[in-house]
Image 1 (cartoon, rainbow, N blue to C red):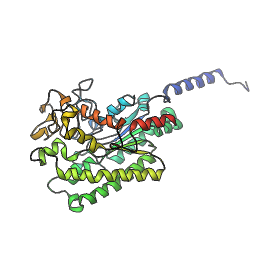
Image 2: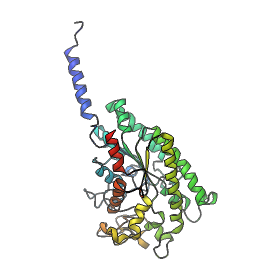
Image 3: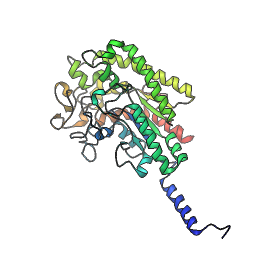
Image 4: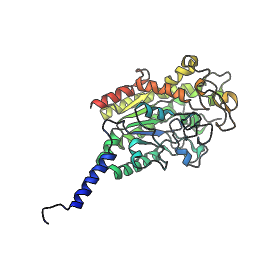
Length: 368
């Protein structure tokens, strides 16, 4: 009859409203979390690629709740896992995981891939790693899937209010500029000039991330590049940090902060916050005992000098207590060291976080 809505349509509309309410993000829940970058934050994407740079075999994951490898370059939880824990969220899954479907999409996704850098050429030796702009293409694909799930308006709101983590730069120095004996980039650029070039390219990356909807972005500086067991094994005589890599980080990191401050001024908002990973690392490297470590030079899992040669694998030397070691393998911190880093990210002073720490940022967001 005219003027009446068929009962079947009413039931259909009610069912649709109920379904949308069930999958819509809770305003009081933890924000969605998106992760971009290299092996420091890769949670398993490289497991799905034909690359030698993966963490898919024991003893990786030995201290994870399942005691099995997850694809993270850690003995247990990695850096993003601990941030998820701190913000009250579930662990975000690798984007390439078949488990990332349905409501799992609302939690966020990890797009990071071991071996990559700011520059597209960085990490070519790892064959099929997901370069940063390809990670962004996958992020756009993710947003299309999210839109199909919750609608365009809700999807935009979720992305705009999400926490985003990006970690890049270390590989551009370690696996590009300082690749022995003399890399093409060393012939082309001095260390200061290469740093300036990297910063200019990183700026483009961050602006693209903003264009894709990111409004709260945590950007980590490079860590103490010259102090990781791999560099100690190859370049250090007595276990001292390698000066030329430390110098590169000392040039690059302040430039990164300056560039981000300029971006924030340009955008009229503190979209980007920087985490001083270098000083966070040096706290436990220069005084391991204060942080409860027996050593910050020898990796827990590895072989050769300082356990810093080759990859961690089932035949490697393995320390019995990972909590006593600052480094898990030749490049990556243990879960305990990552927890110390995340603690500073959450509540650290201006020495570590600029212009604010993550707790302050989230508190401000909750008031807006």
